Structure formats: C-alpha cells, structure tokens
Image (cartoon, rainbow, N blue to C red; front, side, top):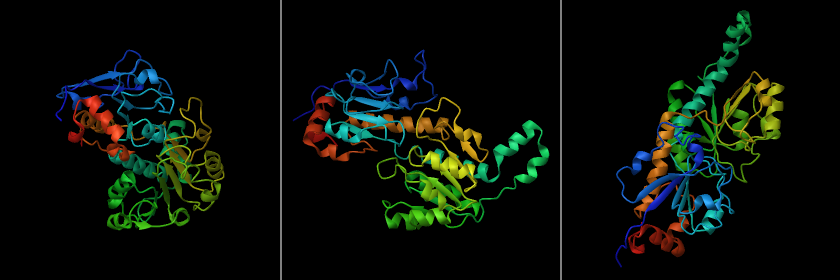
Length: 356
C-alpha cells in the first residue's frame, strides 16, 4: 500500500490567543514551525468560549488550546479531529478519558515551561524572605522607620521541599545549586529512586517535607489524588517561619485553610499563582495580607516561555501531519489502537504501515 493524496491538515488556535481585532496577544506563538511545511493550514476560532463546542472543532485536525475546557460534550462530533494540544503542561481542563474514547490524542508541551516556572519560584522565594513588597510600600508611604520590623533571611542554609518532582521541580533543584542551601527534599511517589538520587535530592513523605522544609513548593498536577492535598492538617505541620509556594494549580491547596494560617501567622508567608476559582475578577481576600505575593496565573509568562511552548505545541501537530509520533502525549495507547491509526491515515493521507 502506498501513500494516497495528502489532505490539508488544519490546525486551529483557540480565540483567546488573539485580541478583538484578531491580532495575536503574544509576540511569538511558535507558528514559524509551520512556515516551510506544505499541507498544514493554521486558523483560529472565531470566538472565545469557556468550553469548546463541537462546532468550533468542525474541520480541524488539531487544536492548540490556551484556556477553554475540553469536555466529552466538546468532542461529541469530532470524526476529523486527531489531536488536542494544551498550551502548557497542566491538563485538568482537558477530559483525557473523553479524548481517548473519541480517538483523539491529548498532548501537553512537556519541558517547555520548566525554566521560567523554576525561575519565578526562586524569585518568589527571595521576595518573600527579603520582604520586598512591604519594604517597597514603606518607601511609597513614607514609613521609613518601619524597616526594623522586617528583618529578612537568606536562602543560604535553608531547606527546599518540592511537592511533585517533575520537570519543573528538577529544574528548580538545578538552578538553586549556587545558593548554598541544604540538600533539597521531595515528595513524589511516581519519580524513580534513581532519578531522585541522581539529582541529589532526598525522598521523603509529605509529612516529613512539611515539618522540615523552609520552603514547600507545589509542582504537582491537579487530579483526584492531589485535590485538597494541602489542607488545615498539613499546614499545621509547617514551621512558623516557613513559606508555601504554589505555581501548579488552584485546588491543590485549601484556600480557606491557607488564609487562616497566614492571617494568624502560623506560617511566615506564601506566594501563589493559581486559585480555586479563576479568573479572579474582584479583589481577592488574600490581598488583605502583607505576607502574601499573588499573581494572576501568569507569574512565569515570558516571551521565551510562549515561544518555547508554541514551538513545542506546533511541532507536535507538524509531526502528526507527517505521520510521526509526537511528544507529550497523555494517552499514548492510542498510537497503537487500530481505530486511531486508521483515522490518522485517513486524515493525513499516509499509509498506516508508514505511520510512526
């Protein structure tokens, strides 16, 4: 069997990548990956909806998704859809099981976010321990003499505890090597012991991490096992001079319990980029506290981040269009499923035996 005539492989980006005039909100979305590729057509959704609809998916072979949810309802009529690519590494907004049921690959941009999120985490660690926000406000409000109330501390000799030792956590360990900290500790039952040993990290239970760490930094995905992972009981185990950081997902940390712990100074402070309910369009109660740093789920947004995520997402779509196995697949079993391979062949015009 030989390849049949190649069909156009249409890749759509969700509308929230663009402003009201249809112009990209971001300088570089990685679309240059497609410039020299025949047979790939890039389009965009006409409107932004919080949940993707079947009509929006009509005629698309692949969709790169920023924020809309992808549900079973979204995929109810997707015979021509081959893949959903999340613009990032979190995928709690994508029903992966529904994707699998409909022979649709679900993909993330693994690796592309590691450095910017790790850098942002370190920035927060320094900002919290040096009381950068309160000291800034002192000057703006003429409270110069209040500086004696905000003696900081260095990262030197402190212990970092990482909850979820994936790519971001591993990059964080690497970037912190020059700060003179103690051996980092991590809680992650899914990372092989050999990887942990190679990183120079000590594997601990969650309880030991919380009672030992000066910084507890959350980098695990949100799922049924991690929802509410850090609640009142867990926060009570933390040291009074320790800090909690969350650049992962809202819902992993119980916000009510955290607010209570911060308000009553049971921990020294916190910084977080994600909330149980997003977007936050009214002043958040955490804004009342002076031992908190907040960000609107964008603390790691950089030009390099969007470029690298975009290139990774687009490369995965390009690989699919050429019959190659893409990176970052969440349901890789589909790549061997007969019905998916038949669909892949039909959409790309590449013989099944030639597919990756």
